[in-house]
Image (cartoon, rainbow, N blue to C red; front, side, top):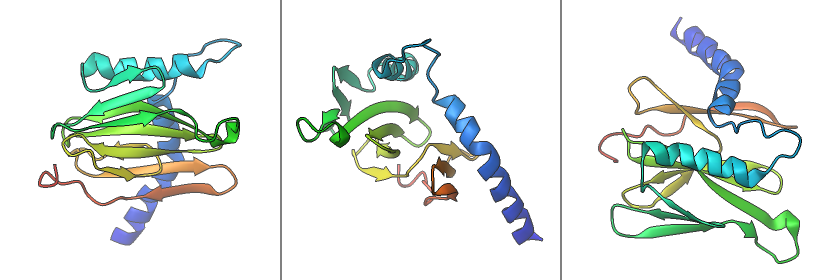
Length: 164
């Protein structure tokens, strides 16, 4: 019975989570000409309204200070000059104060991932998608719909109060 219930919840998550998460981190309609910089600005300003001073944006540089006094600078742009397919972009998508972690979206020429960043130490973990937290705020699932591969769900290690 418990296995059947867990399987049913997993299937439901695979169906519902991608659209819920996509809506959470969606940009407003910009009409006919979409500008990725406007989208990044919109998403980051939404976080800064709730948590002023959490990070800074200086053009292509995303500067994230940590409680330990260090900082990390994420630089967007081409990794190899003249090779558009080497492009990478960083966006600060969200902050989860209950566990003290930030979510940094990483966009590649083809594809994307998400980093869960410890705002005390600067350590990061690639979680491959946007997290959806449990009601207690200490567990999360990640669902991702990857073209040509299919949908998947992962349950990364629990983030506990002791880790934060």
